[in-house]
Length: 217
Image (cartoon, rainbow, N blue to C red):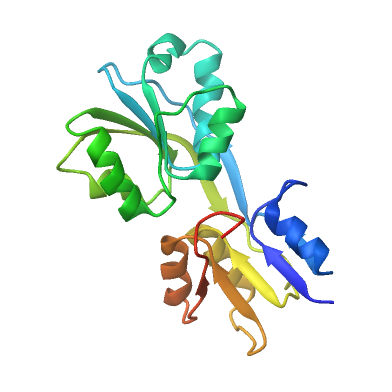
């Protein structure tokens, strides 16, 4: 039986999980990261948009907001997500989105620049975030940086035997290659997203790059 590892948890209705089950592929879904909230305060200046890079940013931003820290102010802003996974997290919490990117930072930045030129954008993010969209739009928007959580790599204690390894972020990539410095010839390394692909190449491996940064991709 073929074995597939992906560096994040999958929901029971995940298209990737369903695809694997239909083909008799064993799936190991495990994040190689630890997430923890960081204290923050909303900036005093106003903002037109809140742009989310990840489902975790949504979680760690709205939890303190929801218990009273500036909820009214935040609720007046339009919401944007870098891709469909983050958008689905926002929608599941009952929030309406005004912009959803395709998950690719460069393409998403260009599309977002057309709907929010010159406006003030709040970017809740991880402490280790690459701030890709924010940097790409530095001369076209007014960006407000807001760190709301931190993530750290937690390499697996023991090597994981898998035929296909799907890595979902640069930090997950670092964690994986800490324990698995050598890739066997019969293994396939798949990257979800261009930044993850770049991180894998920096480890000396040429990955297969998913067509889209989603389970379907």
